[in-house]
Image (tube, rainbow, N blue to C red; front, side, top):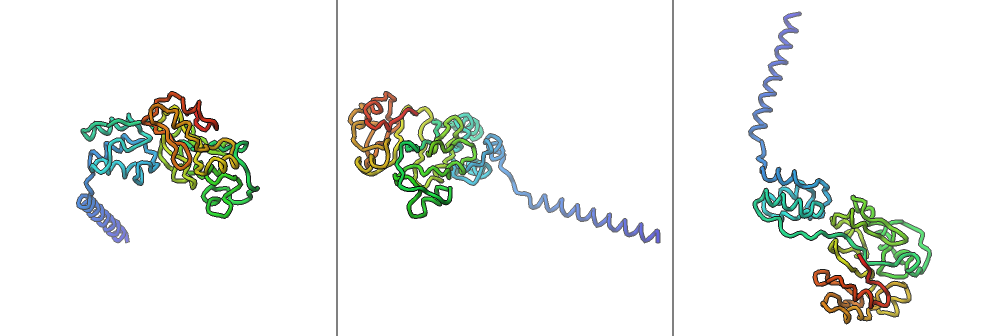
Amino acid sequence: MVNGIIWAAALVGIIGILIGLLLGFAAIKLEVPVDEKEIAVREQLPGANCGGCGFAGCDALAKAIAAGEAAVNSCAPGGAAVAEKIGAIMGVSGGSTVKKVAYVKCAGTCDKAGLKANYYGLADCKSVAAIPGRGDKACAYGCLGFGSCVSACQFGAIHVKNGIAEVDKETCVACGKCIEACPNHLIELIPYDAKWAVTCSNKDKGPKVMAVCDTGCIGCGLCEKTCQFDAVHVEGNVAHIDQEKCKGCGACAQKCPKKVIMAH
C-alpha cells in the first residue's frame, strides 16, 4: 500500500514537471514581441484613459505613437511636458502644444433665460433633447442644464450652476468628452489663455433671441465692426471669435450691447 502511494506521488510529480516544461516551451514559442518604444511611451502617458486622443486608451495611443500612426503630442491631459518626453523617445520634436480647455457657449442662467413650461421628467440632457418640448427653457439653442456633460467628465472639471454648465479651466484636460455629451453642441475647446469668448449659440435673429433670453447675441455686428484685427465675425446670427487672431484688447466686449462677450 505504501509503495502504491509513493508511485502515485511520483507519477503526479512527473506529470507536474512535464506540464511545467510544456507551458514554458509554449510561452517562449507564443511570446508576442513588444516594442521597447511602445513601453517607454506608455510610461510617459498619464494613464487617464480618457479617449480624448481618439484612441481607446493610453495603451492604444502608445502603440499608435510607437508605430508612427499618431503624433507625439496627441495626449491633451499630458500637455507640452509629456509631448517633449515622448518626442525624445521617438527622436522627433514634441511640437508646439497650446493648452486648451472646454468652454460652454451659453450664459442663459435661471435668472436670464426665459421659461416656456415646468419640466418634470428624465434629468439627462440627451434624454430631454430627444423628447418633444426639450425641457423647460424657451431658448432652443441654450444649455439644458441637466448635466450630461458633468456625467461624461471623469476629471470633475464641469458642473451645472444656476441652470448652465460651467467649466473649471484649472481642472479641465481638454479630453473632449463633454463636447460629445452635449446634445446642443454648446461646448468647444478654446486656448487656456484666451482673453474673451462669446457666451451664446442662439442662431435666431435679434427679436426672437431677446424674447427668450436676456443675455443672448442679437447678431448686430457691432463687435465685428469694432475689431481691428479681423478676429470677430457674425456667422449664422451669432458672433464668433477667431482666437488665433484675437489680441485680447476687449474692444468687442465693450461695444457689445448685450454683453455676451465675456472675459475667459
